[in-house]
Image 1 (spheres, rainbow, N blue to C red):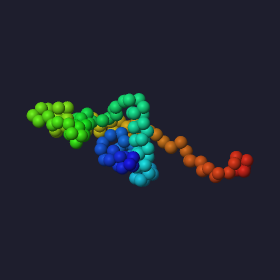
Image 2: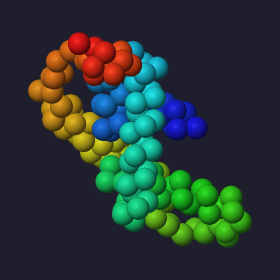
Image 3: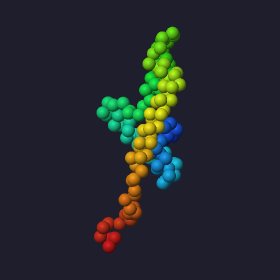
Length: 133
């Protein structure tokens, strides 16, 4: 399920997509999807244990999704009144939020641009230290 969520996360702009693209360039898309799924799991764990919200969530989209869930759960409709989810109907609001998240993606790319591998990976043989010599 986490890999499916990772595939969905990389379709939208944001730091998770930038991470996916960086790993995909080195290791391939399937390995990148699993790495993104792991990052997503760690992110969810931290958000739940610290009782925080995701910083890069798009507020209007989030409100819209919550309202859709409320309606499916049987809450009454608010015909004729504009709730928090109404902002998602305004194109300029959606575009502003998308632009904001794209800036976060670019910031992540700049942050990791100078990262270089530390060197060749050591292969463990399974032999004890005395047997290797």
